[in-house]
Image (cartoon, rainbow, N blue to C red; front, side, top):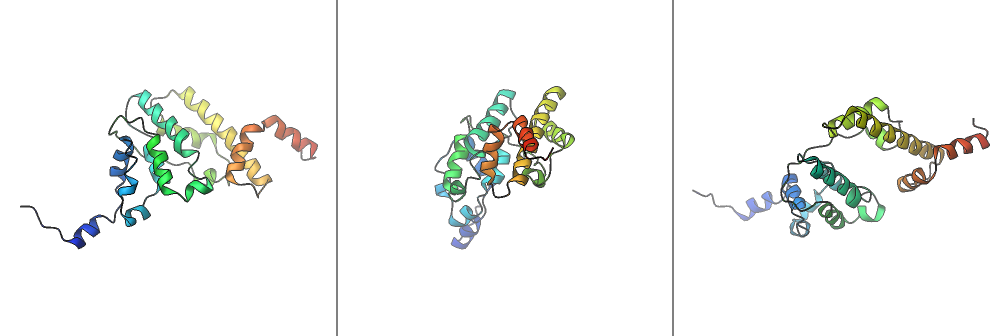
Amino acid sequence: MKQKTTNSDEKFENIDFDLFVALNAIDKKDYGYYDRLSEEQKKKFVPFMLIHWVSNVKASSEVQGYYLLSTEYHANKYLFNEVIQKNPKLQWLMLCASSPGLGKQFHQWIPQISNKVSKLNDLAKQKDINDYYKKIYSKASQEDINLLSKQFVEEQHTKVYFAKKFTDLKQSDIEVLSKIVSKEEIEQYERDSGNQ
């Protein structure tokens, strides 16, 4: 026998934002899903949390690679932009754009790198990043893991340098600088400044 629900029951049921229903909507490229959320559910929409789930699927290596690269390309690199952060619907649309539209997938949580490393307060350590990548790419060879980790650590150390040297820079400016200024140019700058 089906239990009758009251208006207060329906209102209570619509308060929570269901992460797994949202992931399913992203997999289906349901661009209208965000508009159908209640105001309470919209308040509980956390794009940063979703990005960690969306980017990792238990599937073939091709589908895994697609989700990872597409999430980075369509959503992750823009998510913390000052303007985009103030527009959750746009964030939702970016998350949907990252899906290949293959239907429901099994998503797994990606562990995070230390907050201090992410916020450029501490230097990344090769061993920690190796461990992190092993969890994400469990089928990758140790050689590939080492290569990825080495690249991440070098890039992160450059970003930390800029963050400490130029404390007024925004994270987005640091990202740009780290891509256009080489390690050799930094070393030359330090020599010219009498710091080496």
